[in-house]
Image 1 (cartoon, rainbow, N blue to C red):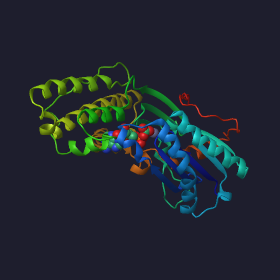
Image 2 (cartoon, rainbow, N blue to C red):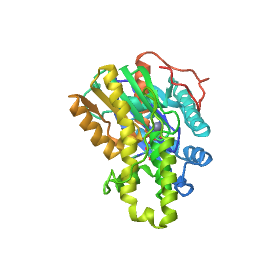
Image 3 (tube, rainbow, N blue to C red):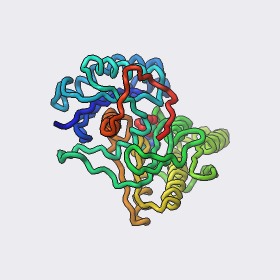
Image 4 (cartoon, rainbow, N blue to C red):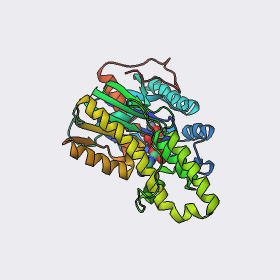
Amino acid sequence: MPKIVLGIESSCDDTSVGLTADGRILANVSRSQLEHAEYGGVVPELASRAHLRLVTRVAEAAIKSAGLSFRDVDAIAVTRGPGLPGALMVGVSYAKGLALALGKPLIGVHHMEAHIHALWASRSPDSAPAGPIAPLIALIVSGGHTYLARLESPLEIQILGRTLDDAAGEAFDKTAKMLGLGYPGGPQLDALAELGQPHRFHFSRARVPGLDFSFSGLKTSVLYFLEDQVQKNPKFIQENIHDLCAGVRTAVVDMLLEKTRRALEESALNRLGIVGGVAANRLLRREATALMESLNGVLYLPDFEFCTDNGAMIALSGHFRLMRGHTDDLSCTPDPALPWTS
Ligand code: KG4
Ligand code: ZN
């Protein structure tokens, strides 16, 4: 009988539950919380309340969509951190209740490790999905984190670089806000940039040693440039929105891929996986494809559904841990700043 893992994700503003059978995805049901849009960012207290309201229904919908009953579940995986304290508390408490009621093991999962495990996400009806060929380099780009890592296997991950300040998604969202776009601005900025000239406006790229990133300088450079131009012409942003978005997008993608190229070179590898919400960015996808073609390499990009926060990646993480016999007891607690030590 295949081992069924139920995964619960509640670290930010997505309530999501996924199910895997021996690592193959059976269901992935998500509810985004739209109530944050009017505040221009995620409101932690609203997120906790929304998770509480949604988690039972989302879990029931996932079980139904997989054609299972809760009694079929062999283990319950849940995001322990990093994330918003109250939001994590809802997911972990629900997972503990389920583990206790079903008499099944609980598995605490690191959110960023789970983003990487999305590279193994497959709904293929064949038994266990093969996943990417390791070793490989992973670029993890989300709203809260930016990492470069080297993977030897799903649970052997070496962090090579990280952001020293803002995350890549945050850089998109904050500059999008300066340009008057709604929240989260990343996808809108990407769509508008498709119609713009990428090299009309040049924004500064950070020079950070090694494989680390920094995006706060870009944010400041956009802010000062816009303040200066708007003073001369109050309609400057509206009149140049496409080129401004294209200029920002090119700067972020250049910085991401410059370090990625260096990580590949230094590791002498030509396999790359990109995960996290920013992996949806059209320019990043195009440029990463071109980079890997030039290196005669392979690019792994999970379906968008598995790039943003989702329960299926948590179930996959649980699956890999269960195979190694890693489970937690009911004293497992959420940790908003959970270190990544693998
Ligand atoms: O992984 P994710 O869903 O949540 C976190 O764990 O943070 O990532 C969300 C981030 C947001 O910052 C959002 O603006 C960004 O991913 N994002 C994009 C695009 N789609 C989502 N950024 C740029 N271009 C996109 N197409
Ligand atoms: Zn995430």
